[in-house]
Length: 374
Image 1 (cartoon, rainbow, N blue to C red):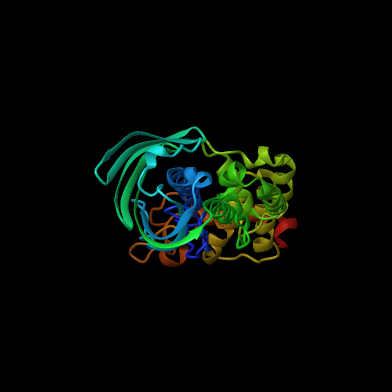
Image 2: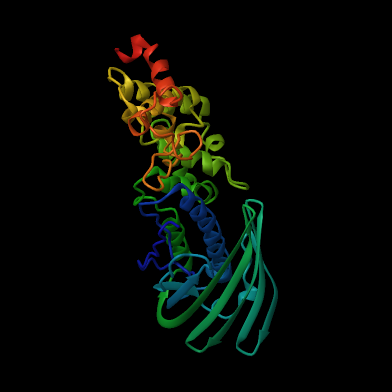
């Protein structure tokens, strides 16, 4: 799972959850995909909370509150810390979500007020995926406390999130509209992005909410995917996820040209990532590796059987590192083809080695005179 860093800067954004997300290395392809799912729905939560408290901003002057929130995502390998921010909330909005308008992707329903307690249900539709949930909040003269739960599916996987938040009035006049603008700017701040992986993981959010960052996203992915196997693989993985915006389509990438370019760099480090996408280049790499390991050597005796077998396999086993070495039991060598103990050598039995498969292999190798320098 990518590391998600809450941003504790006091931006003044008038939302109860003013946390931003940042990816830090190292990160695997599998973990990035899970991070993409989490970021999409964390953004949805922020949209709900923004719609709860921001809508009356244009109609009323605001005041400062100190807001603390903590988010929990079951299945994450670590607990996200709580964050505290100074935010601007329109007067009255802190205790009456019924009078706010919903976000275009999220709607509140079944809003009930009993004394100083408000409860509601929420339904969000984002990129064709639906999340539903419920929330409740209790308000006092100078504070409030609440919780919200959301659940749904993303890419066929169950996703659930819980958020607990509280607010304390600290006073002082402020402009809620200005604070909302700052919050939106923070959510689209990409100045700390250090790799194409961060851009790819945030692509859906950028395409939907940050039009001024679209060009930089496309420029970064176009540059890196054509020369870096890791970026290329992440791009393919992202675009094959259901209900995600295709980066290749949105950025008008020529994927045939991109694939051709990145395939020119197949090497021992990226072979496992590129082999299935670059079959001819992978084959050429295996052959080159075999030649480097095998040509010009002098082979004699049973001790070289394993090396010869690796050469004759064209370097497949070493290149993709996917086949384990044959186990050794009772201290005896194993047959390469069956995994059973190999036949005793002529040195052990004193018999001629006519039936020894290694000898047959050596004879075959000796016919490749031009290749093995015999």
